[in-house]
Length: 79
Image (cartoon, rainbow, N blue to C red; front, side, top):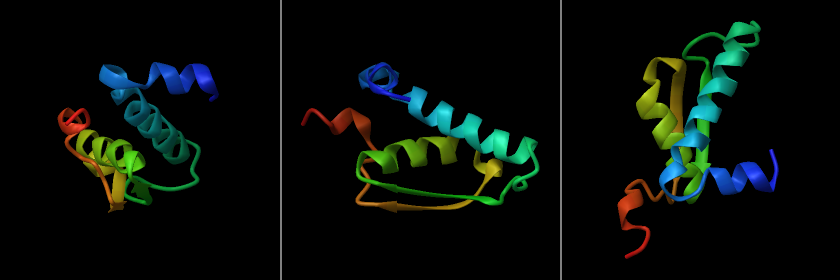
């Protein structure tokens, strides 16, 4: 999505990345590519935060996730 999207999904707006991931997964289901529970997630480092957030927000949409070296407590980033 480019630099503008990346900047818009920073800091307190980080949830934008997860909601966009959810929207993409829902589109895959809507278009018949997969079914609910048929999408698997993989995220490493900051990507694990995005995948973890998506999994928490819409657990029925995903069949599972692998979170590698994930930073799941975003409040600790500055520490």
